[in-house]
Length: 356
Image 1 (tube, rainbow, N blue to C red):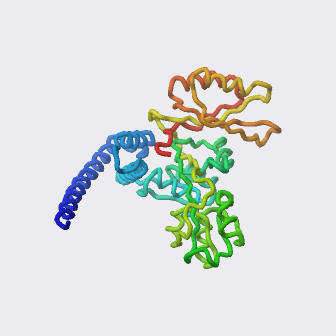
Image 2 (tube, rainbow, N blue to C red):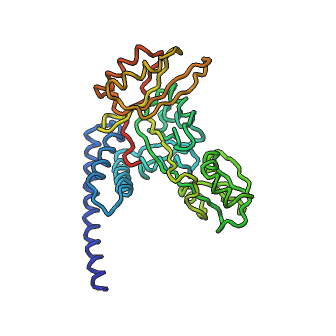
Image 3 (cartoon, rainbow, N blue to C red):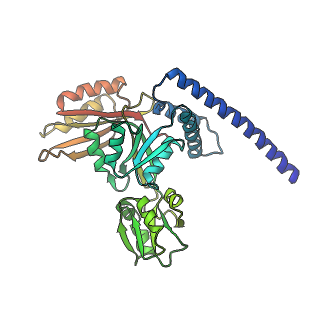
């Protein structure tokens, strides 16, 4: 058995040597690409999406798709950092699902900026203090994040990507087990998502809403009788023990995050375009707006309405459609829709999430 183990380990070592040489060769080519681009942005979301999609299509296992995507995101992150490390803002503090989404999209070779509010994420990008930002826009069980939608309406920033993050809620504390927990901290949405589990396992514990899961973990780290509902990244950041895993009531709970920048992405081949539009409040006007999409074969993946702040019973409509704004069918559809609107703003075209 020892001889066979040594042989197999020798083969692994030889493969590792080749992998390291190939990764460094890739890095040198990435540096050469950076010189050819001559100062243009180092982050091209459409190109990175194409790379990941190609690798997923070529993957024959046994590595799962999620592992392949994670490996290539980190490899591209390290290569990108050789040109210029990206600064990425997100809704903080450290340990939030927003941070996890940012690292899933950009890898760990970035400078992250945890911000105190969604508004601040927008502002630091607008001021040029961050290249990109990551903000939540909707959750599969709790619905839309209205503040993000409202800011997209007025901000010059554009959507250049999306991240689908499976939300795995864990119970964290300083000690072990459930005994002695008197209070549970978490964001309001997380408490709602774990309502049944908390009722069944900690019915006497007081539930206190805080501004974020990261803040909940920080508070739990200071009190042996407290626990937090948060993600694994929060446990790592604040040195807490996961005493119960996957306590969310819906096992498919997912949050969609948007990647923001000062420009959107070029076509990747599998894209979405996000729009906001408004029209006069008359019978049949919404049907008039939507008909061109159907006529031109454009699939709507989302339709969300929000009241206009300065108008009584006036609404704006947020749409996600399949395709890039440069695609002929999308361009033609928008031209047909615009005469029937009082507002039409393209919020951005960007690659669909590769591995939701």
